[in-house]
Length: 526
Ligand code: GDP
Image (cartoon, rainbow, N blue to C red; front, side, top):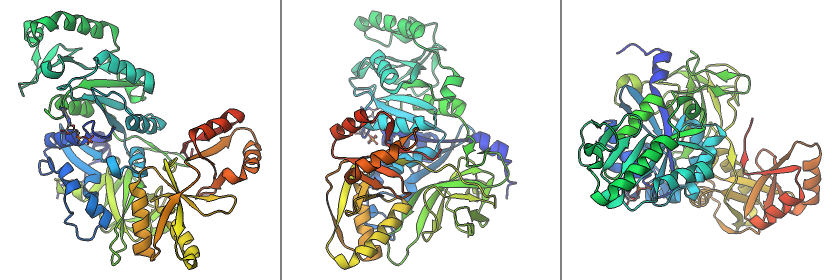
């Protein structure tokens, strides 16, 4: 067996990141190409296929089987260029859920994939906001340059304006759509050709025939002007503002044609941050500290009624996690034995038996672990909780058997603690409202209430469609507001006051009338 790596060198090698994008921008395609570079060939081409195939893991819940969601794709670990990459999957499309947001609390950087014809779309924007909460550095990949696209300046301008994020294009497309021929590295005058897989060619400048010659005659002059403008007028990449989350390096490419992906992964290897220190209640925990610490950001349940186990996904924040070690679950003070932590796609035994800061391990348990839980080697320390995100869908639960009301309440409480849905208990005593950000969460709740608790339920529309936590810096303001609006107030799982509005108009109305109150869609624990 190889000697254990020192935490310093293990941490320096790691890059833990996620891809944020709107559905169809090309996340799956890019993921496959990244994995190809990483040599995790057995996976490439399978990422999407999993969605369409009945899982062979016989014991995963029905919904997972039907929709092909799999624990396996939650974390993809691969090595490239002397680095260990942990790519955390952010579930999208119909499996979009709060897990998507929570996953972003466990990464150190993110790749933002933008469809070159569509620009910034709603989901990208929302996911970006979650990254911004922690000033996560973002690398931008403008995808589908082989198709008709918008003007590159327009796209950069849109990123700057809608996200308040400076952009620094690293490469510039040589032609677009049909005429997309490659890219020019703006700082180093290197041409990467679409039709050649080789190393990029040095050129004397944009007007070098080896560069400009790739374009049809009638496009050359306009393109030269464009590049001059880009070289002179746009920001250059700088590491400090990137690390602070204020500036994003931008790559143009085509995931489908595997073009620009190597530049992207090289950039991640070179400049993306290694695991950062994590804020805890008492202090900042450095990744290289010897004691193992970590927090749970996602729970995946197994629905087989005979095996009530769950997988808790924990990001290691410091130290060295080893198979078989004992840890302390800080919330309860009880020990928890890490006898069978799951390591993902590790190709090397020395990685498979131990994990360092930035790594994610799956811990099977029977409901002991919750979202936001901290594990340590004994220290009484809690990482600042994983934030809650305002649900986008609210439903009332319709219970056909009134005898089960109490049981339902307990079950909902547990499901909410596990992070399956959010639970809002109206102040006026009316039936509980559940909130989710993705509709699949409602299906999961219904299925689990039926199988695990024997409670069949249905949903009905709530008269509310928007939930916002309310807070204020001025004493007494919140209480005053709550008293005045009893019929629109509820409490969340922690007892925090939540304002419910039927529409955006209703919310705006109250916001305008109560400037001292903040209506927030993200509840953090800082
Ligand atoms: P996701 O929903 O973000 O995971 O997107 P996918 O990776 O599934 O891509 C959505 C569609 O766009 C698929 O049909 C892809 O083949 C296509 N696509 C992805 N990247 C590119 C690209 O660079 N060029 C072109 N022309 N199509 C692409």
